[in-house]
Amino acid sequence: MADQNKQQISQPVNHITLSVPIKLEVETSQYNSWAELFKIHCRAHDLIEHLNSDKPVQSAGSSKDTPITPELWNRQDVIVLQWIYATISKDLLNTILETDTIAKKAWDHLKSIFHDNQHSRAIALEHQFTNIKLDNFPNVFAYCQEVKMLADQMTNVGLTVTEQRMVLQMVAGLGDNYETIGTYISQSDPLPKFYEARSRLILEESRKNRNSHTAASTSDSAVHTTTGTRDNRDSLRSNDKENSCGNYQGTRGRGGRSGGRGGRFNSRGRGRNSNPNPYFSYAGPRQPWTSPSPWAW
Image 1 (tube, rainbow, N blue to C red):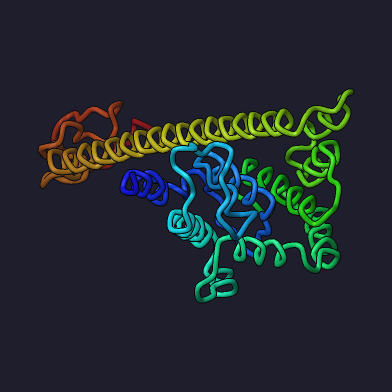
Image 2: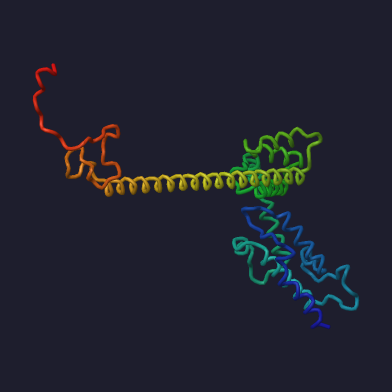
């Protein structure tokens, strides 16, 4: 029976981070959320009394056939203490770690840490909450999560943050890029719930990303088309230039100067157009010059 109880209570030690995914830290100050998840985990394993008492107590879910002996209580208490240590930061661990301590003492120590100086922490959280901006976050989801976390932290220190104020503050920090959807949310009557408003903002972000991607694809296609047309035009010009140069050289090689060795108007050259004047016909060899007869005048 003792071995069976030992196996039952030691099995969930390795799965505490699945039930309590929040790592308790001084900076984030998520004590209330962490404490609620931790208590739920303890109730699920019938160990909630270790957070309220330092002596063996027969819990309501325990069987009368297996009474809580000091030995079993101490073993269970050590397991609860391990759960506490596994879900807090190293700074908090060094603060509450003591020799031969018990789970209730560590639990109370953490509670006192996060409930002291509430007024100072409330002022700092209020300043962060009212100055939060979407431009400081990579996307809308991270921005909305920060708004929700700050609201929870303010609640932990005694400040009341209504869901209406969360929505209005979330809209106030959007900026000009989301002015249209922000105006629509803020002017809705009644004002939408926080998670509904967050869903609308995420959908708007997705729509903007799709439009940007489509515009970028269209621009790239236009650039490729223009580049291809320019390359084709340059290729045609290059071919025309080569053809012109070839025809010119061929003409000079075949015709040469249209003179040849026979004089200015001699047509003995090899060119196709050796006569420079197509209207001038050669009548024969040149005759010697003689003076005209007197009677010709």
